[in-house]
Length: 217
Image (tube, rainbow, N blue to C red; front, side, top):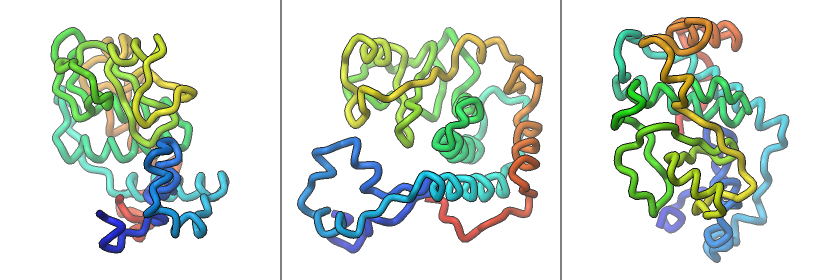
């Protein structure tokens, strides 16, 4: 439908990937006849160019960081949305500790009880509506997460639609996260604000924002 109205499957997202890059993990979609005319122009970014692209995207998002309230157990929607964008970028940059920290802020800080959360299990057959315990994020897909029950089924040989069996998953919202004090996000005792400030220093960003030409999508 989108192609019919002029959408370009070669347009890059904030991770430096086009629609065709993403669909390669899903052959039934990648092989659609409607995409054939675009495949001749398909040229993925080199690993080096894509890394630079992602770093520039991270600079953009760090430059528009929200003001965090560190005492709440569940961040407001705009702050969770910001953490989600940044987490996806750090994951693609293979900075899993930073990605994990971002994704953990999308959950209410409750471990052994049903939790409010922004992320839901991406397995279509999942029946878990409570999301108690760990959550697992694919370290290779752009954004794909599953509950602990579905992850254990995957470990037993089950297939998660749209995800390769060779992909590696990382644990989010684990026992270590449970033991952090409210408002603290890592072993160093940092608040979210302190973590953001340190990442801004690392990437040479100030709160006025940089590279605003980079799209949010």
